[in-house]
Length: 339
Length: 121
Image (cartoon, rainbow over all chains, first blue to last red; front, side, top):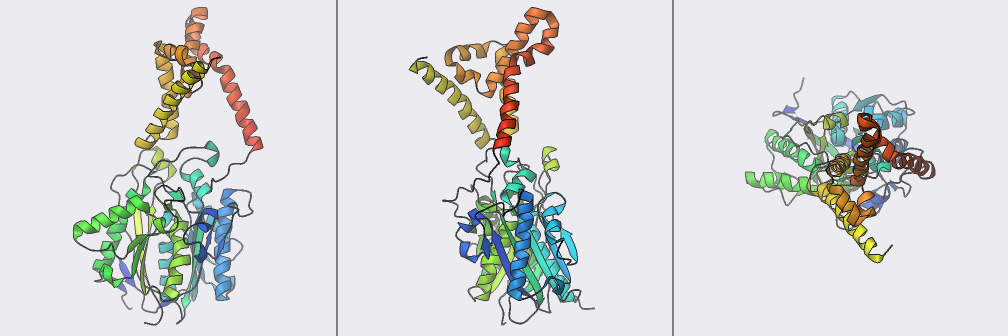
């Protein structure tokens, strides 16, 4: 059996699992942001025609899957497995969204790291031959996430300056064998990092050390340096978390600033859109990857991308009980076609 | 009702709200904790007689914010103890604030019936 594991935490994909199609769906605020033209669909109705915020979030995932499928000209029955997850209790957005599809389903919980987690698993399944085609899917919704983690909107609670704005959005990647598409080259599976941050309104600071940990591991395991990538993005650290990652690399004497950005600061105009420290949520990294970033890879504006989705793995109960926030980050390296 | 009374009420009420905003922005206290702290502070300041001065000077500016609710609880207990003895410790607070609590429940239910929460975007 061939060994594709590298270093401590990384894997290589030698069969070139390709991203056959991808789609991003967003809400009103995302549709007014700087990346608006890269969304496949945005709606001014943030309930997406549904009765509840939770149903709206499921609808986001349904739409993302439908749009990606129709771009690739594939049917539900063409998929051997679907990996999906979200932020709500028991991952209901995902299981309700895929219940009509009849695609074999593996539910995930990785909080906001779910896009990288699901894409890693989809690429692994395709690379190993366990699936001919696999789908990776995730979502978040501002209003359902507020109810899940903080207060229902009807409570009218105030937001603190370090708080981030949960993106209403979903992203979907369809992975299979093909030559003419960006392909997933390698992945680094994150470890839990917990430096004792307890403030659920300051998740960027809680997750930044995990992003640093995974990036270091990625570079060490695969003998790479930041310069080997045109762009390295973290999922949803926001302004504050982004600064912490830059600081950590500066202390190491590693220059990452030129190629590093964070999806949470890209998806909104932080000055004009009143989102405080930036965007967050599974849908943040997912919609930026599946909208803007993969399009850049397809059009040749990017050659090598390292997508590092970060997740804060606390629950409302652990927050009430005063626990700190365990964080994680998974990294996926994606390369443009033709190399 | 004079303009001066309005100004005083605005100053006292505004000051209490400004303290709440500073607590939200500068500390890690959750809104619910600040809310409870305000009520408890009102009870303590009301029980020790300090809050009465604020009410005398600022009127509704002191009675309407959450500290005013705590003040009302303390005042109710004191009056009930005077009338009925020690049992008033248990009954006085809620009796004095019954109007406020019933109004909060009623108008809360009314608002929930009439309006749907929106996501501010």
